[in-house]
Amino acid sequence: MTVYDIYRHVDTLFPFSSAAEYDNVGLLIGDMNAPVSRVLVALDCTKSAAEKAKEIGANLIVTHHPVIFEPLKQVLSNSVVHFCIKNGINVISAHTNVDMGKGGINDKLCEMLSLTDIEPLDCDGFTIRKGVLATPVSAEELAKRCETLFKMPIRFTDGRREIKSVAVCSGSGGGMLSAVIDAKCDAYVTSDVKHSQFISAYDNDLSIFDCGHFNTEDIIVEPIKNTLSAAFPQTDFVAYHGKEISNTCDFGGKK
Image 1 (cartoon, rainbow, N blue to C red):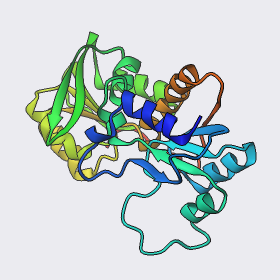
Image 2: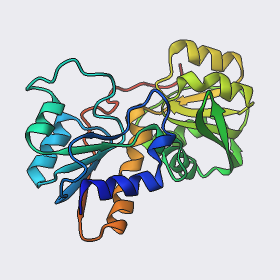
Image 3: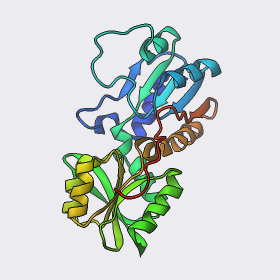
């Protein structure tokens, strides 16, 4: 089996061509024809993840966040890109195509929150999801549910109304706020919400929940690892959940 075999399968599940225009996805480090011995699946290709790949003999890392996002002007010896090249580690990154794709992260968030009647919600070409809770809840109740699901304190603003319809966006979704407000959702579960966006949500009677970038996206690592393991049973796939870039501060309650 080669890097290309893995690339082609990921492309079948989450077409790289469907990624947002600003994104950088696909094979970002390595050789399509390189044989694959073992694969590490991770949210990010951090130095720790790359070192783990080397330790276990994995010569391919499949990540969500691109290992190279903006153009590089230099590749120095202390960089993760240099480490991967030096150690023969290939990297495939599948980012917004997995966020938006069928069975991707936003669908997984809907599943975790037990939402039904799920519909796409277009935000300037980026598709998130909205769905309905079986039983209306208060903002406090949904906040507690999110804290249990994501295993961390969260920041939220109470929109002062019962929550039935919920929009979700994995990762940095604060910029999608206006589309969620226009869709007249009762709540928005996302992360990386700015102070001004909390205020805007409050002024529009919308409950917004910041559940952490790492926590809303690391949930896809195991499903991708399991999907690839089923497709390539002869190859060993290892999930990596390094917490070096997770949200570690105690956000407290409402903002």
